[in-house]
Each structure stands twice: as C-alpha cells, then as structure tokens.
Image (cartoon, rainbow, N blue to C red; front, side, top):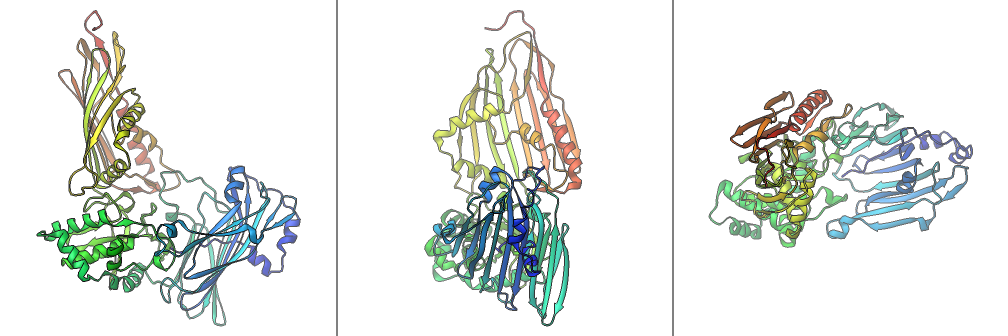
Length: 630
C-alpha cells in the first residue's frame, strides 16, 4: 500500500526566506473551532524528488494545532509506518510551539521505533516498523511542527510510480500542497478533484507538478457513507497508463509463484479424490479457506509480491496474496484456470479513480473464468461462489499477461427468517423459528457464531429479545460454521412473559423474536441518508415470515395493513392476513445495490420511511368474554 501523501505550505515559506520560529513568535490567535474539530492541519507540505526508476525522496513538513482535549491526546504524537526493507526514515526536526510562543524541541528520547503489529504476527512476511514522535508540552492551541524525509530506495514496481494526496472531509485543514519533481522525460499522468488546483512547469531536465488546496469544507462523515477515498478532495500522479497495466505488473511477479509443484499436485489429488469440475473447485476452495491461517501483511515489498504456493503450503499461513496464489496453484493442478483479482477489500470503495491509485488496492482474491465465480480463500466462512461483504460489488483488476477490468457481484444475498409465535392466556409470548441466509449475510452469520461460545447463547437470546422490547429467555442451535458445503441454519426457542396484560382492549405489536437483523431497527437507522455523500446499504433481501396465534376470547379489531412501497432503489412488500386466530405477517425488503449516490437520497428515504411506518403498525384486540382468562 502506498503511504498517503499529506501536504502543506511550510516548505514553500522556508524557501521564500520566511522563518517558522519568527512566525511563531508572533503568537497568532487560536484557530476558531465552531465545528468542534479535534485539531486543525494548519499546513502540510510534501515534496517528491522522483527518479526515472520509480525511487524517490519525500520531504514532509506539517504543522498541527490541537483544538480540544481529545485533539491533544490523539495528536500529541505522530506515527509513520516505514517499510524498512525498501525505505529509510529520517527526522529532520520537530518541536512544540506553545500558545505563548515558547518552543519545546523534540529530543532523541521522544522518538521511538517499534515493530508493526503485522510483523509481530508473521516476522518472515513483514518488514514494517512504526516510528512514533512524541511532542512535549502539548496543550490546546499549541503548534506541533515536524519535518522529516523518507527515502524510497526500492520501488514497488520497477520504473513505476503512484502517489496520492487526499484530505478527508472530517479533517479541518488550512493549506495543503504537494510537489512532484521528476525527470522531464518521465511520462506522469495526473488528476485532481474536490478543489485542488494544479500547475505543471518544466525547468531544464526537470518537470515540476504542484497541487494545492486551501480551506476545504469541513464535514463530519456519517457512518453509513462509502469510504471517503471515493469522494474526498484528491491529487493523483502515476506512471501507470491504466488499471490494466497495474494488473500486468502484478502478474509479472506473481505468475511464477503459482507453480503447481509436486507437493501441490499431490495435495490437490488428495483433496478432490474422484471429484471433477465445479465439485473439485469447491473442495479445493473449502480446503484453502479452512486450512490456511490468514495473517495480515502491511507495507513493504511483500505488499505486492506473493509468497510461492509451495512455501505457503509448508507454512500453512500467509496473507491474502499467499492464500490466493496457493488456491490458483491447486486449481491449476486439476486443470482449472484461475486468475488473481486485485480489489479494495478493506473499505467501502465502489469506484476506481480515473488514474491508478495503489492506495485503494489492499486485497487479492481469485477469479475462475470457467464458472464466472470469485473466491476469497481468506474469508474463513464464505461458501464457494459467495463473498464477504467487503468484496461485494467492487471493481477488480483481473491480473494476467493481458489484464482486464471486472466487477464482483452485489449478490445474491438474503436473510430469511420464519417465526411461529403463540400468545398464552397468561399474557406470555412463546416463539420458535429458523434462520438461514445466502451470500455475504450467510458469511456474516457463520463468522459471528464461530466467535461465540455456546454457553453464551442464552445470554445472546435475552439481549436480542430486549432489543425487540421483550423481557424473555431462550436459546438456539446452529449448524457447523466450518462446513462450507452445507447450508447454515439457526433454530431458536424462546419465551417472553408479560407480553401483554389481559384486558378489554389490547394493543400489540408483532415482534420478530430472536433475529440477527431486526428489520424495524434497520429501517429506522437507515431512513435518513446523507445529503452530501454516497451511502452503503449492505443488505440484498430481508424476508420475515411471522405467524402469531392470538389468545382465545378476543376478536380482532385491527391488524397491520398489507402494502407495497416501491422506488427506484428497491422495494418493501408487507402482507398481513388472518387464518382463523393466527395472523400471518410476511415482510420483504429488497435492495439491488450495495451503495447509492447522493441523487438516490430521496428514493432511499421514501422507501425506508414508508416501510418503517408499515412495520410499526399494531394489532388491536377486544375481549369477547366477560371474565379474564385464568
């Protein structure tokens, strides 16, 4: 992954002969903070001196002002992730400038280097270190001033470069500047969005590209928004002509690693036995997903070069590239062609940028052209042909000698729950049901329950029922989460005393009982999409069938209405029918996409709001006998 380039105006000021210390001595007033931002990036400057072979030296200078107590705590130190096998970090200077102008220098004792967590998990795979710089005497209104260089002496890909500067909307920023100095003969492609301005000049044999951004709007991004990488202000510079060229570059290094060695062939035969075709593919995928332990790998050359299939087979652990490469080799051993698929799996980025941005490609899965299926062997619990939610509806680069672009499917993904409930004469509600799912919803259920001890099942049922407004107890059973070749079914039984107080008129709401997804809560929390940003909605189809048997001695005055809400983004259908003394309520929410642009906001709001109103409707009963039931 390429380090994010952050920028500012301080270096330009120094070049112009201005003194940072003299400027600080003027003690400017504290930054106004009506928005309540924890800190402000006053200035951020990043200058690249780029060589034709893709190596470079970065000079970074930034000034940060903490604005709140939390800002002091979270920004009183900075951390830089360094891939020591391919780059050097050097701290030029760092200091705290107090609100009264007094300067507190950062000393050698304030700088710490530690092993990154990924290197602890798998030292043979990672070369990542974290350099932490602790600023002394930090308080609100301090100016934290730091300059450092990073010398990248080995490129991720020979003779290639990709750099990005971006400002998330949730960061209060003053002046942002990035400068790229490169040989004039180097063909650099650039793009800007979100308010950046860009200039390009040539002086002798050097081209100078400068992008600046001043005081971008500050907004708190809601939790249901897609990744800010999809819409934040951004500058990109790259030598890759297109995304397919990145796939070609990856494959040039990865192809040899997919060799089906004798050990790989022997294992493939043992796994598949007499199986062929799709059945053989399913068996090989199930084995890889079950037996290869995933270990996260951070920046370094290992970020783009996978371990050989034979090595992973011996070690039985690796990152996504290692698992993918082994699965490709196993499939190859059985005559099934497969390709690596480069993807963003760590965030909600559903569009590729116009220019190549290595920073949004952080995962590799497998594509099998014959069956038109994507497989993620690191998913743990995704059945063959299904994908985790992070992989769904994403653009991918299919890496080969002639790479191409494709997109993973958005589904089908469904959650299906059938519940039978009975109201006892004493007012208790008894319920039992079954739950199963497909697609990434199935993966999610398997993953959740695999982490949950069976002894905790009754406590979980109690908590879920309380979310439905019920005080009750119960438990559930579940199929094996590990067997990816069989459906995953959950069966539950529960009881909630005091569901209603017997009386002349009784008003009840139809509760869904034990559920992994409460449809009412889902509708309510997603009924107000952002007016500024695209949003994600990670549900394909929710289908609930609830049969509620009413108590004897009452007649029905009103039931929930049947109705259909349909907009351009999806639909909600509710059917309520009486069968003797049993109400049968069937609800289906269908969404056909993982994410929605801002122009779909009104359609989303209409769908969720009207569906929520239908879901909240109640049953009204009137007692027909003169005495309450015993």
